[in-house]
Image (tube, rainbow, N blue to C red; front, side, top):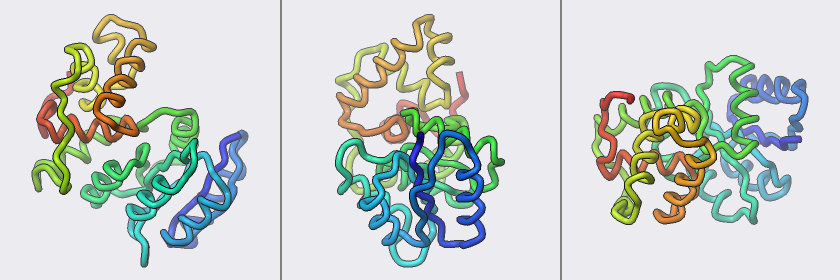
Length: 224
């Protein structure tokens, strides 16, 4: 059973999400919030597995709420799935840097929403990586590398770890990377875990961001 907290300041959208999730097998809605501050309180009180988090909300934004929830949560921390639209590229980027596990477009259909919740709840670090790539590229091409902290040094990675990180940032799934490199999917996961450990990262999404920040992948680069 995946325990979900729904956060959105628009009542109709929030009610629709709650209704859809409650009707799905294997999912329990443990709470809902209309702003970031309430989301922080609800997350502490209900200990959800997954949080569907809107970005633009009055008062405490979804980005700040994501930072606070992940900083204050005991292990295991909830997996935060950002709800966004294509015109909020920079907010998505900031959310990924804040530690969000991934994101979902607000115009996604019911099946995609449920699949995203299941994927994130099951431990996958990033949903719809090809869409993530387009959003990160769009932001990076407009503004260059954001953030006030330098990107991690990737020189400590092995050649194979570097290649797996590059393919991940290009939007490839673990299975696609395994096929590309003629290795098992489990080996891909091992390389990613070692990469995140060496770079002190918390999620696959942050690994994608680092690949762009360090120039390992460039905006507009072709998918392998």
